[in-house]
Image (cartoon, rainbow over all chains, first blue to last red; front, side, top):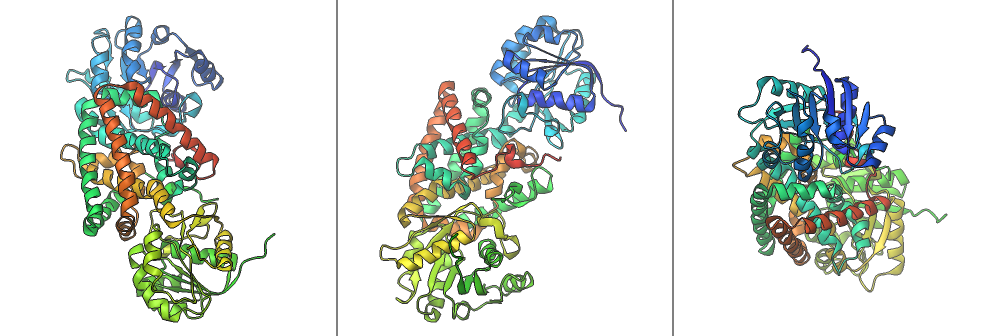
Length: 307
Length: 307
């Protein structure tokens, strides 16, 4: 068995769903002598302290990173630059700085010029989450069996990359390394466009004049309710994702719309074979996701049907 | 407490997910002296018999309806007419004939001219299901707390409608009555278009040349996996839905695409406020669905996160 990864001090900036889940998983794995949380909101800090998520929780990010050998930025993508500027002067030599943002190229471009040469910037993205927000929503097992993607720069310090990989492995994740542009393309189709079309259909359904909102809610078990879950995700986080992964999202959205237009035409012209062929093909992907351990095997996501 | 509804003989045509769930719920509630299942597939009949889903299971629908005072057609919408023609000569006087199809106007139009005047045709649609198919996939609690929509004709026999409503209530459902065209519009947005866009994005993701299918599967927890569940639904059933609810689906799809184009433009031009406003608005619908008991309150659909 590999030697347990350990840090003198881990500092997490941002005590929301992801940041607080990392804190809990760090405590679960006893991965640091000292764990410090920072959040600009005094309410969030108070809540984090009440939940005993860290040895200390403070509103000043610069003070929080003092002495840290690992700094994790768990703030919306649009807030990375201001946080980076704030902590840069306080980072100790050799500190690893990573993040959990859902977009990687723009995060690297905005953080990289701000940080001192003696810190190791290695962007990362744990592909995990729920539709909830805030420190109370986190839990230690969030990253178990999920993938964490790291997008190190070409000149990455090999030892730092190894330590960061070991950190995520200790949190329960499987680690994959790829370039930032490829990450942004992959996540555009596996996460960003799915969120956008979920938000969109919930918006469309809310605005109808021929079907009431109460009807939409009553009959949502016909399929609609599945979309409302991810359409309940954090608005700030997702606004920033779309603004910062524009090219890849627009590319994937273009393909989605093109394919949807073809389906629309098949429906208009009564081409049942085209519909049947697609609907048969898509079944296989579900099976493969379950085989890969990336979703529940039980029907209906294991909903209890207790009534 | 209302007197328990009871039938001498209930016959269900089609022993798939819905038909077999009705059979189980009829047994659970002891709603019939005799329960008969029919399915054109000998394999399905054998499986239904092994599962003890009914007193008898036969491949001949006409024989199966003999003596029935309630006949439930649980076959794909496209098969309703041929089943209707087959059973018409064997229906006893006063028999109630209903169905569970996801489209109501076309079902009524195709069945109505085929059935004898001495039978009462009242189309219905339980808004419930999972992505699984076949007799082994059914379960008795599938309809508990879900809505069943009945779309009786203007000249419906009041006593027959009352008996059918009491039947669905005894299966655990809440019953709503509306016109067939309104049903088809409501379900287009709450069920049919959601299924179409789920099928579509799974198709788009499978066909990419820049992102491998294995990457799509590995990182599906970013949101994509939610869509694969309903995209694993029965291909025949869903082909028939789209072919038989063309006008309403095309109308709702047009609105969806229009709204999506507006979001696409907001992303291209960096209009974060427009995105943020929508993403905030959609959160409320999720909360209302949970408050209405139409989905699990637990985050992530109550997925276990056991890893």
